Length: 513
Image (cartoon, rainbow, N blue to C red; front, side, top):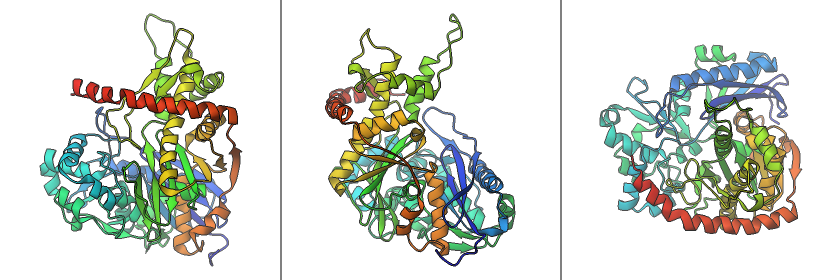
């Protein structure tokens, strides 16, 4: 370790889409305190999601303050702080740094038409090879085209287009700066040159001066806004380390730092990722590739439907009808317990869990959910089991792509809310046919942010040392009998997807709003 005082500690902050989470750790990565800060979302329309950047800043402060309070440490002892943030968000600010929009999150699909037009008129395959971002409306590239076409008065008034993290960094240290990973997730960064991509900027019609300065994740700023430092409970002289995105931080926090290690994250949504020593791009653009620093790239895929799919079933089963007596409320744990009462394969029920459309590997916005194979012999237990298996098959779809383009993945580290359910973790391990390891500390993105604070201040000499600091809790090995069933079921799952895909597009066309 570096020459940091024995009473020093580090603060890692993770600004997610739904809330902000912070962790305080010591020099040996022992967890001293944890805090959560919620923030309200201003978008209530079904087709878009925007969040109030000032509310996100306040949530960040509450989260960090709570973590420090719980840890009982002296605020003056903070040796470094770093901030991670969710990918694919964008907002416009004017020349006085005031927001002109909310933070338009990844879930906002208002740019779907613009993405479709670009795909029809531009060589998006070339754009993917440059930026590592498949053609999809979730990327800020297409959201800015939408803003230019639909809200031109805002587009032209905007001095800059930034993420939620950049909004907070500006208020913390006074500069507009963005790390490579977050910039890469915008669709505007060249994955090879680590500069803003000219073709992407030309598509939007802006110059690089309307974006932030690109920074390495190790970049350290000295001097935090005294008012904000005081609100958090740290010294204004605390070093602020730029850090990375929540996705890259999750890999670090899980200790998945080698090319043969991956992370399988299932929360509300889900993702499967590896860290590579070179950019890896798929000829069919099924995966994405985001820069972390000059020698590392985050390669993977993401799904829309993780816990949100289980939440749909929960809400369906808890549906209240005036003519019926009040039903018993089923929790997530209840549903997983119900699923555990059914054998692998859900007695012939297969679920395509596309309740919120699809991202990797097919990037089909029109994809819809379905249960196939239901009979009078099936009940909610079979649906719950099939749904959990369907989400596991979504992760296998991405895992197979990564193994194909990057080589064998020997270890998978699990993170996200699903790690609290041994049944679900075992289902995923069986479906992937691979060993899964669960880290002791589940909030891997905030822990990864804290690691950047250590790296930027010299308390941790290299990323390669992170593996020594991450403690592991449990190992799940695939059940051979269940894995064999899932191998056959996965073939049926893929055939079913291919068979009904034309119907997705037809239904979408029929019910266009």
